[in-house]
Image 1 (cartoon, rainbow, N blue to C red):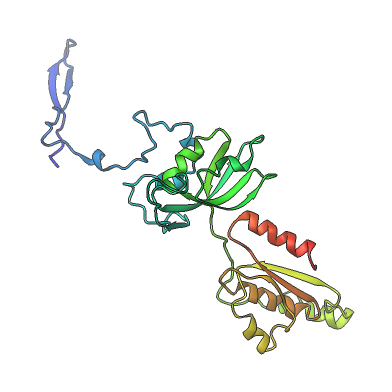
Image 2 (cartoon, rainbow, N blue to C red):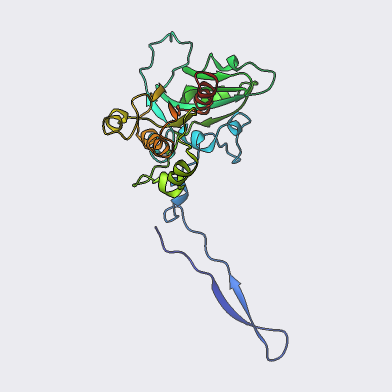
Length: 274
């Protein structure tokens, strides 16, 4: 990089007696050989046109997804953007999937459709639809990164955003709920032990449920309605509830991988045996 040229200041005589003024001469223009090329290294999403604007379709895509469509952005696969990404084989041409998989790089997304349009309007471009709800105008699925703009350009699509993994809040130490809430006093004073109650827990998983049952920290009759996630926050939460109300009937359902699966978990806990 060349040195920055500086402006020069030249004293001149003012028309008024005894007063001197200064004239500032502009800095000379750098030659092409020494000009700074920093701007050339700035990476913009490919969706940004020469005027710095996004197309109508690209405006429907979240920032993280839009950056992921830029092949030169250098973003690691989901590590810093919070995206859930996987790679699959690209079908040989002519594609038997109708063009749903063009690059083989799939991202887990929510696609919101406009009222009056069926969620099926995106099916021809989404590689794998996992859930859909017509009342919420919502589709959850794996879409090829290279197809995001095509999906967004559909008239029936309102927006596309990434599916964020469920977050759990278990700390290093398990909260001693029985002591904090003083439920031991409630049991001894009023005789309330949770008998006749059904309590449902939604969390990430119950990986070590059997271990807790073996040590007596949980009863043997915990109803696990679904456990397809990985984790033990569910086990910890069940133990806390069991300490507080030992005679309650306990149920567990994993939180799922998106908001529709989470809603289904609530529905199953409230509508089915509970």
